[in-house]
Image (cartoon, rainbow, N blue to C red):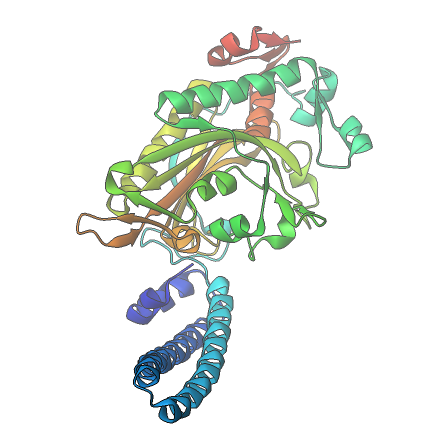
Length: 424
């Protein structure tokens, strides 16, 4: 969430950033924020004055009672009663203005970094890096959903029977390959200095607001109505919320965590061949990296996260590319995002497997995540996160790109984890 101070002091910059995102009615919304904030500040000033006068009169009453001037004390006491009523009205007005202000601020996305290209859709994203040779497959090469059935390693029909579409069952070597990828990703992350954590898989409303899933993505999360809890869409949410309402010290940076969790997304309105098989699921496994950084070092941290994910994909031997997302495709909370895509030879298309983002202070402001700087003042931290990696499309890419006439050859780096080198 943007701060009102930042909006007031940088109105033109905010409007330019929102224009890059194609945000409708930007000027009207920003003017409403400034006006509502002024009304809130005026109510606060008036409330402070009333409370100050009330406190002053209360002291006078005490002195008058002690000196025996009861009648005069009672007259002033009546006035304090009126001031008490006035302070109640002003407190209610201030609370109303705060509520209206927050509702406005929740509508406004983060301001894009200057590196973010203009654009309205994924077609305008900028390819900044490409690596690996796209393999040439036999004419009878299969997409992963057919390979899963052929080798009896993924059962989509069984998952559909138990739960519904988008909840596959992994079997035999498919289940073991899934577990191997999770262990491999976690090991790579911990070797790079990330501390492994295991967070809850459900969050409360405050956590959803803290990282920006609420109210922006409310319809995409599974809600447990009886307990007013949500199934997590990514480990980013609970792990970042570890630091909600926290005051850090400069020496605490960087804070680096990694977590494996199942993730749950309703993906409402997702239909068609592009979401077939593992391409888009309602439940999937993902290993995440999350960083809390000093603002001066967050973009260097973002670059190191990108390099880290590149190193993993290089070891897996998958052809991939990196995109810098344009303003129209940028996530609501992000200031700058790099998407990783692996090439699926059997599907002849690129599949997104990771997003690495810097949110700057946007989440920290919602989380009240601050640190004391060298001057002793409180300052908002920067938050970052990335997939390292999301399993379904990595698995799809591995199955499709590594298929041969003799079976699916397992990348060498995974063999110590799988205990086998081929699926046949």
